Length: 207
Image 1 (cartoon, rainbow, N blue to C red):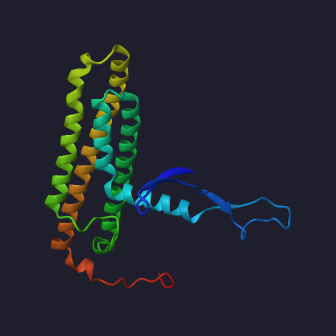
Image 2: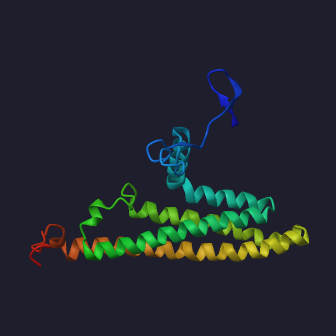
C-alpha cells in the first residue's frame, strides 16, 4: 500500500493494491499442483506506464538525474544511475547493429522498421546527441571540484567518473552508428532504388 494524492478530494489517501493474484486458468489445484500467479491489472498498468515513460524520456532524464546526484556529492547513487545509462546505450547500440544488418538484407525495412524514430529529422537527431554530450560535459566539469568534498566521497567519485567516461564513450559510439545508418539509408535510396520495389521470385518450396 502507499499514499497517493486524490485530485477529487484534494487530500492524500491510502491506496492498497496487490502486485500478483492467482491465475485460476493455469494453476493445477485439482491435481495437487502448484499455484501459478499473474500480475493484477493495477500492476500491469504500473509496469506498462513505467516502460512507456522510460522509452520516451529515459536517457536524457537519467542524465539530468545523474548530474543532480553529482552536484550534491551523492556519488554512490550517481554510479548506479550511470550503470543504467550504460545499459541503455548498449541496448541502443545493439538495436542499431541489428538495424544495419536488416537494411543490407532487406532495404524495405527502412520504411517499416519500428525501431527508428521517423518523426525526427537528421538534424534533430544530431542536435539531440549534441545536447546529451553537453550534459556529459557538465557532469565532468565537477571533477575539478572534488577537493571541496570529504576524502571518502572523493574516493567514490574517482570510481564514478571512470564509469561516466565509459558511458560517454559508448554514447559517442552510438551517435556515430546512428549517423552511419542514416547515411546508409540515403545511399540505398539513391544507388539501389530498385531494391525497394523488387519482389523476390524465390520460394521456400521451390528453392
